[in-house]
Image (cartoon, rainbow, N blue to C red):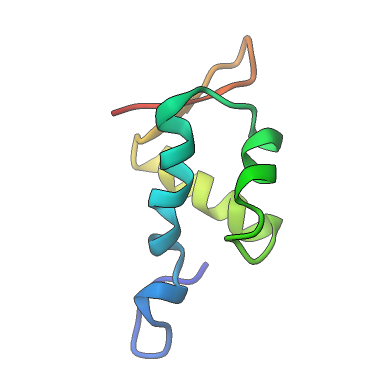
Length: 75
C-alpha cells in the first residue's frame, strides 16, 4: 500500500486516487468490476484498486450491498 512519505509523493500514493473512485460512485451505485473498468487507466493494477476500495470501506465512505453486490457511496 503506497501512502505518502518521504519516498512516495502524494500524487503517486493511493490517497490521491480516492476522489477518482468516489466521483464515479457519487453519480450511481456500481458493481466492483464495472467500477474497475472505468478507473483502470488511472490505477496501476487490480491490487491497487482493491487497496483503494479497502481504505474507502474502512473510512466509511463506501458500502457494499450484499444482496445486489453494488458499491454505494456514503456521503
